[in-house]
Structure formats: C-alpha cells, structure tokens
Length: 361
Image (tube, one colour):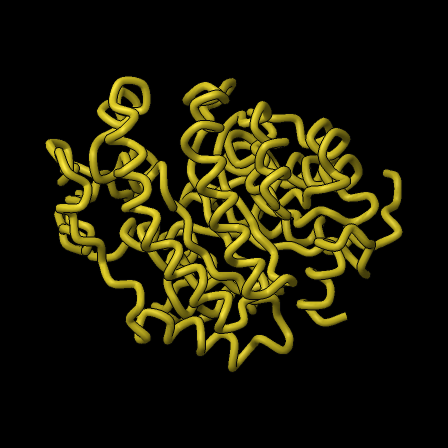
C-alpha cells in the first residue's frame, strides 16, 4: 500500500496492511531527531506550511501543511515578538533545557465592538504555497493534511485572554456571538481554500478539556461552538464530500464527543490516555470515529524505558486498532527531554506490531 492508501483505508474503518502512524515534535526535538538520523537540515515540520524531511524519513503516512494561529508558536526567534494577529509572545527556558513560547499580551482584552478588529487576510494565494508544494510533490504517495488548529475558542482567548472569554461566554452572550462570528471568517476562507487545493484532511482544533474534565460545560460548548463547527464541516464537505475532518482537543472531552460526531467529525486527536481511556473511546465511538494519537506523552515516552514504550504502543494497538479506525501517534508534541531510544521504540513497535491482522502478545 502507499502511505495515502493506508491512511484512507484506516479512516474508512477497514484494516490496511498496518496501522498508519505519525508523530509531531517541538522544533528542538525534531532537530535532535534529524541529527540522530544523520540529516543536516534546519528545515523543520513543526507548524510550517511546507513541512520538513523528518516525517518522510520516519515513514509517516501523511504530511501536514500548517496555516493560521497555530503557526505563531515558533514563528520568530526574537526574545519577544508580535504575530500578525497582534498577539505578543515571549520565549522561555524550561528546566529540562528546552525552550517554549507563551503569550504575554492579548491585544483585544478591552475590545467592545468585534467588527473593529481587522483579521489577517487568508484569501492571499501565497499563504498556501507550501500546501501546493506538498500536494504536487507528495500528494500521490502520502496523505496531505491541512492543519489549522487553535481555530476558534483558542483564537478567541489568545486575542482576549482566557478569563475574559470564559466570563463573556456566561455574561456577555451577544458580544460573544458577534465576536466568534467575526473570528470564524478566517477559517471559513482558509479551510475552503485547503479543500479546493485538494488536501485529504482538514485538521482544526480547540482545547476544551483539562486533565480530568472539560474547561467549560457541555451546554456552553453546544450553545457557542457546536453550531459553528457544524457550519464549517458542512461547507467543506459540500466542496468535497470525500474530505475528512480531524479535530484536536487536549484533555477529557468525553461529554462532547457525540456532539462532534453529530456535526460530521471523522478523526479525533490526540485521545490522551491519562485523560480519556482510548479503549473506552474506541468501544463507544469507534464505529464513527478514527482515533489519532493514544500513546502517552506525559509519563511513558519521556520517563519510561524503551520496553515501557513498546508495551504502551502494543496496548493501544490491541485496544484501539482492530477493524481500522486508528492512527497511532504520541498524544502531543514529542518534547526535547524524550530520549531518542524511546522515540525509536515507538516507531519500531508501531511498525512491527501494527501489521494486520493484529496479533495478541
């Protein structure tokens, strides 16, 4: 099978030759892995439009072209920088020796009229040069995904501040509806453009979960976000009925998985096993959803042994992989402190034990 055939077979809930796989990395972890593989390249895949060499080198089954707010996380090496949305970012060091960015200014904290905020122009053709490049060079062999995470709820609080947006959802409903409708225009344009270019999957996402519960009530999700996702998914599937929709949310979002399926979701990411049991999600929703992720990134990958990683991967294959409907992957970015031996154990185990028919072990 080609990588694309393997991916699409699994998403259609059939068993390909093996479970499709991928992993995503922070830029530092990606560079470390590239050096280990003997590749001298500064081109990384993390949140970039055209991708880098590592996904192909490691035999991922799809490639991601990123657009939108998520590309701001690592977009400038300056100690502080302001992105095109007006959000101010600062670089920080962590105890393990890695670096990360945090927002230090929310430009719309005092906004009164949403129409006063000018959105970046996502109708510009040059924004999609990387997507065109991936499709032209690799679209026959690999699945191509348009990544547009941090889509609506996250963008809303990136611009305005988390506390303010959560209060607005309860106390300023008219403002919030107007604000979300205004922000939604970027992804309507960008998503439609990606579909028209020929991506196989549109990947959006907003973090609605924390470790053991939702960040907001399911009722608020259904009031403000479900109808807007329904509109987006309908527009994209009207343009191409074959396009698949993937959605990212960290944490425990079990109460709204059925709602996402109801509005047309095909793929759920990252199914963090410390927050939601992948076996339960597979059992309850696997008829409708492909699970993408499931491999623990909080404890096993960074702090376990290669044997621990192998056992984790085997467990997820056995409990979530039967009948297709699984893309095996770490349940978020691989961080710099993850040992290379553990990263290699993930790939080796997924390729060896992910072959169909899945074997008991």
